[in-house]
Image (cartoon, rainbow, N blue to C red; front, side, top):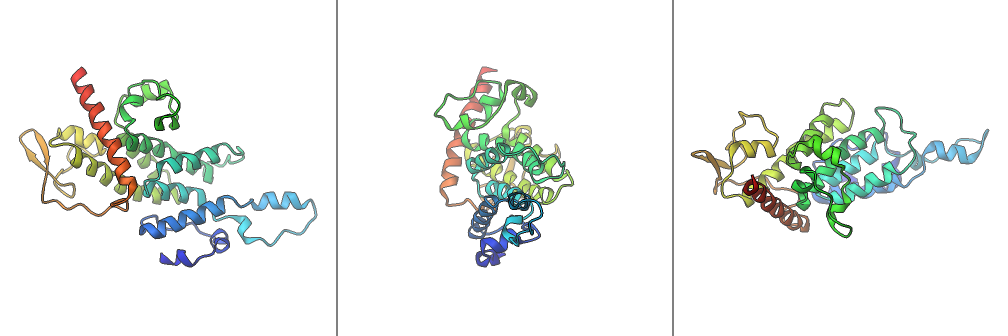
Length: 278
């Protein structure tokens, strides 16, 4: 996959297939985002033919055809890299364009499904989870949380679930959609996101209720907290296993991790406040 470093933007845009995976070293993933952004800015072949006028020869412009599903790959890569704010900006650009993507399997349709998870990942990473899930009004203008669209109706439908849970459930819907490359990317993101949420819980909680842990990771009731997750049962609680070494995240040592830590700490405080109220 390091070959992406040697692809020109024109070669990437003319490629007949989208990237087969998003699980790449950070440098490769970042390079792919750049290529996807370039492809996003290219006019479609239909637009060029329309501009050329009726009867004109079809321009031989491979870059104009665009890499299929480049926007879907771009969104998935941004989520993999923890760039949730950039994922939102991508969605705003895509949703603000033409509604000609009526095909249920179009890039726009796949992007919309992936955004249904991305918006909750952004809330989870910035600590805005409990506020919107509880139906409260979004933060005033000027706050990061204002950049996530949510309505009171959506909040009520969420039932107050943690946004990590909602994000993972949305990714599962993408994975079972049968759309490609959406299903492949979503399947890869589920493991990435679940590991990040678990890592955040291990850093933030000295102990946690097993049901709460499984809920936040959207795991089955029989899921083993010690198998690959680094928890040990002590009575009715789970406590972090000090000897557990988690798999390295692409965000480790990055600024995005520090920003995520602040968000998760805020999430913990809000969660504790809710428990005290009830």
